[in-house]
Image 1 (tube, helix red, strand yellow):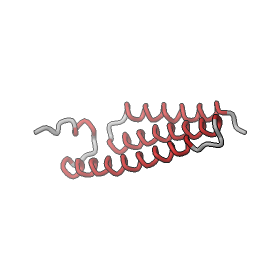
Image 2 (cartoon, one colour):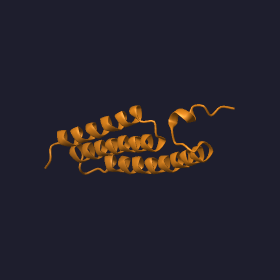
Image 3 (cartoon, helix red, strand yellow):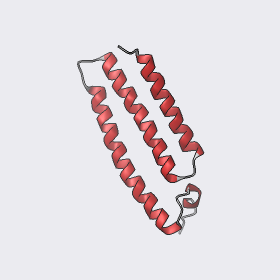
Length: 102
């Protein structure tokens, strides 16, 4: 059996990569992909802790399924907003979205 620390390191690296992507990118699609990467890291954490702490219960796996459902809804809504902004501005740059005022 693979030690828990390996899964924690993997999810930590994925989460740190996602945070770096959110903070350093200007393209809205890449920011959305980085947020998805962070949600996947949390899902790996939940599943790993569930398997190691209580393998008989499926609580961590159920939480991971909820995280996947929230991620799917977030992608659908985020892409709809990005497409709408792209049609108005012809750019998916986040800096230009900040200038959308009345």
